[in-house]
Length: 117
Image (cartoon, rainbow, N blue to C red; front, side):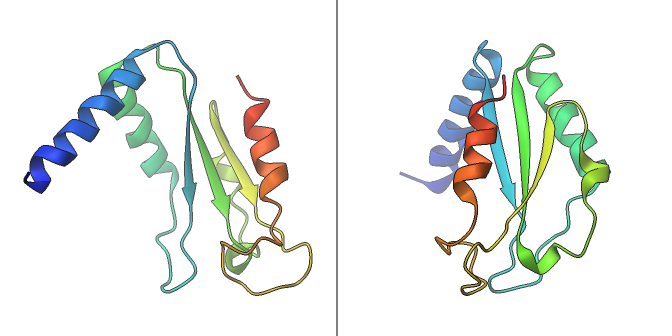
């Protein structure tokens, strides 16, 4: 099976979810492990919401932006808007800086997401 077919099927499944009345939670974690990650902007969020509305103007999609400690000195609260939330990863035991680190406050983040919508 070619990659194009596989990705088209994934896109089709995503469109089906967006067209449903279910709450959909998408998580974007700024990469910090190997490279300087792309810093999401308000324009990116506007475009994201536009694409969702093109599929379903009554979508129930939420965007959760997770900020790793490398970027905790930057204020991303300007990205917060309707159905968009920002979370700062906190290392609870001062372990390594890898975002997969189990010392991070992922449980708190996912509890917050679980309580939305």
